[in-house]
Length: 123
Image (tube, rainbow, N blue to C red):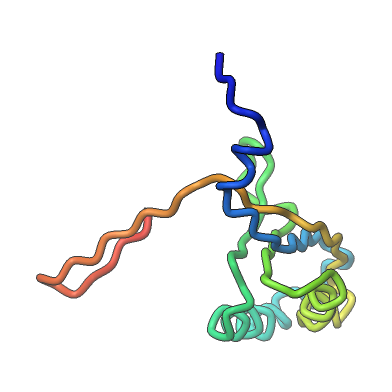
C-alpha cells in the first residue's frame, strides 16, 4: 500500500480545466440541413485552439448516436457557454446541451510521425 499522500499525487498531475458540452437532440427536422454549418463551426474552433475534442455519443450496442460531446478550452464557464451557444445546432434550437467543468488529470496521447512517407498516426 502506498504511503504517498493524495495531495502529493495531485500536485504533479496536469490539472487542466476544460469544459464538456453534452448535447442531445431537441428537434429532429432540420438536423441534416444545419450539419454542415455545425461541422464548419467545430473545425473553426479546432483551428482556433478552442476545441479539445468532439464527436457523437453511442449507447452500448447501438449504432445510431443519441447525442454528442464537445470538449472546449475556455477561461471560465461563461466563455464556454458562449462557444456552446454559438454552435449552429444550439442556435437553431435543434439540440439542447449541458455544460460541465472537467479537470483533466491523468491520461496520455500517442502519435507517430513517419518521415519516409510524411504520415502521422494518432492512437
